[in-house]
Length: 274
Image 1 (tube, rainbow, N blue to C red):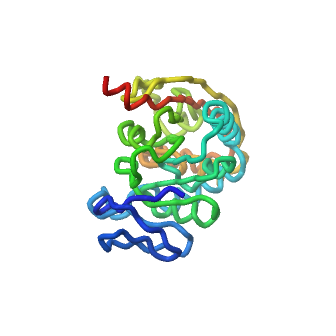
Image 2: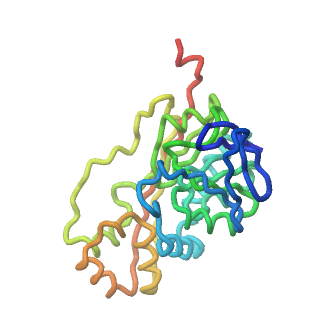
């Protein structure tokens, strides 16, 4: 099992059943659901960072209903193709753990998220994976710990991901495409503003091995599920009162998902020094 690091002093944590503790005496309780909070106060950007309980519940309901199964299937196929011998994976920004739960063929699965609400649910429903409250900007792991790192619609902290990946390890970056959820956007925004989006980034310490775009349509047949779709996206932070009113009157929606999968290989540290 991978040993996390103390977020205070960076010493290795001894992982007990009820408490994780380092040699310097810093200790962190294991919550009843099984997760450990390693997000120190100085690394929080608010009192309750990340997704709220309502957002996590909405994402759980939407994803568990199977609307995004094509995304999970594509992720699994790419990892089996590009990292067939992987023994460890980190989902950096794991949310309520849906995608990590689809990768049970990898023995050592870890998820981190800045939202305690998300990690609490993830740990409660997936007892075979390890979940931490932490930030991707300061991963509590030593260098070269993982075979794979995932970023599912989340922050790409390239330097940190490169640090915790082994040489030749795989980073899978999953991004929303430019036409992702246009149906939802047309309801909640008065007009759609075109923004340049960098979908195939050059990342330090990484080489792009493969990129593909997944598109599929889905139909939501009730107002509750339309609401859940909004609350699992960042648009919930941006919606106006007028947009919320229009959405409240929407009791069905057919929309299209457009998702970009970028597979990167971690360059050799030896080569980087040349």
